[in-house]
Each structure stands twice: as structure tokens, then as C-alpha cells.
Image: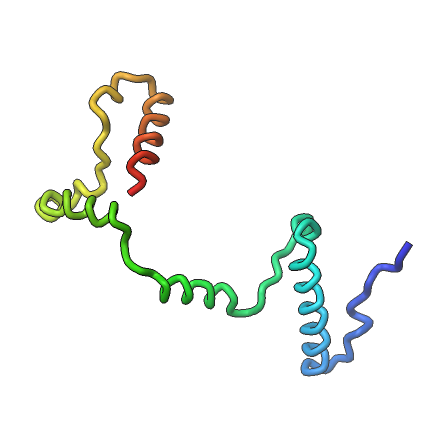
Length: 119
């Protein structure tokens, strides 16, 4: 059986040298986890380079092409009412027969209605 890895034995109490060592280890671990997705699924930690999440967010923002056609139609259809009564923006129209159903069925009905509108 292999001996457990002791990273502390690699440390020399010099932040510059130790950070270089840690960076090398983390890069290697990152490469291994990228190559072996099944292994990565069993590991308790995510390993991402500093700023990687911000880079992804910026890329999404810069590639945003605006709202889809259905959203624009929905906004156009309800703009007058929402401008007149802003609180109605937060009120989802429920089908009239939904209120006669038991509570669990109402929840499912609202979910299905939301899925069908997908706005």
C-alpha cells in the first residue's frame, strides 16, 4: 500500500517557494480531475483557477444577445397593464378552474403552466 502523501514535507517556510510548489501540485491535480471525470465526482472539493468564474460570467454577459422573441412578446402584451399597475407584474395569471383543485394539484398546475409558457 502506498504511503500517504505529506505536503508539509515539501514546504520550506518561504512563501514564494512554497506557493510555487503548491501551484504546481494544484495544476497537476486540476489536470488529473479534468481528465478523469469519474474520479472528480468522488472528490470533496472543486478546483478552479482564480478568476475562472468571473471569466465565465463576463463571457456570458458579453455574448448576451438580448431577450428571446417570446419574452419580447410577453413584455409587449403586458407592458400597458404593468406600467399602470406595477404590482401586477408579480401576479401570475392562474387558470380559472385551478382554484377548485386540491392544493397539491394547484401546485402541479402552476408548475405545468409555467413550463408551457417558459417565459
